Length: 326
Image (cartoon, rainbow, N blue to C red; front, side, top):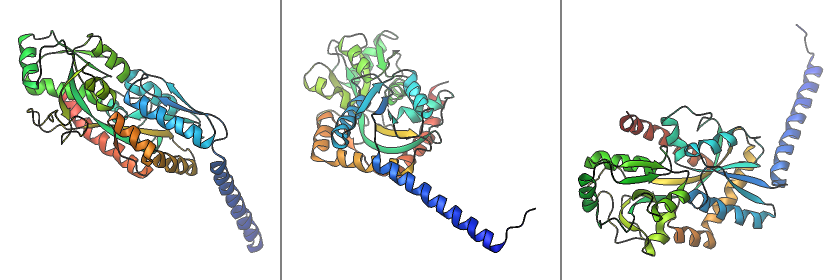
């Protein structure tokens, strides 16, 4: 074994320290200059849904503030798993980001994925959340959950309900609803909230749970009818709509969260810079007005808080999915 003299060891240590400092300088320099070219923000759902709405809002403001294009790319399919897998495999340089929802933590409970929700990504920020409304097409002759249940029982297997995929809260909420009230409805999956909303407005499906942020304007315009809100308390934008607990389905109040992630090993300095800017955007007057207008609740925090939310949700949904999907 070669021995290193003390002067040699000292020279080696100084050289190593110098290289570490140089590398740190490069990392901080890269973060300071970031972004130097357009950034892709891949949305796991079709245009028009909650993730798309929030993703585009943030992308537009970032483009203006930083003078670089933040380009939204919709890549729906497989309950947002196609988009997640693409971002997980992308270069960890901050130029490919994922805009997704709680589906990231639900889908793995149904089937093995090409990515790990924890180790494949660097959480940047959770932007907000939105509870689901239980809504029906106006042609359906019901104005309450009680009337909907009675109609479904009188027509077993004839009513249809939509969801944005089996790995989403709208699907789980409706499956719990069916189980609790002992009714049978046919599931019709879509590739995202925008397609799902179109399906309900056209009468292609008759019932669904869908995020308030996606449906609020249609409910206000009378084109859809809200029967209940899937939240612990009544929602300010629809104060006359009862909660799911008020109509007899306790124990399941859940909101869909919307967040942004980067591939694992993306430099910490870039994650921190993105987090600070997006938090400022969401908390700004412009951001709060947009959130309130769409029916979103603000949830912004640190990347660590977002990581903890993902871990908690993974544990929460795995047990529920195993019980519902037999």
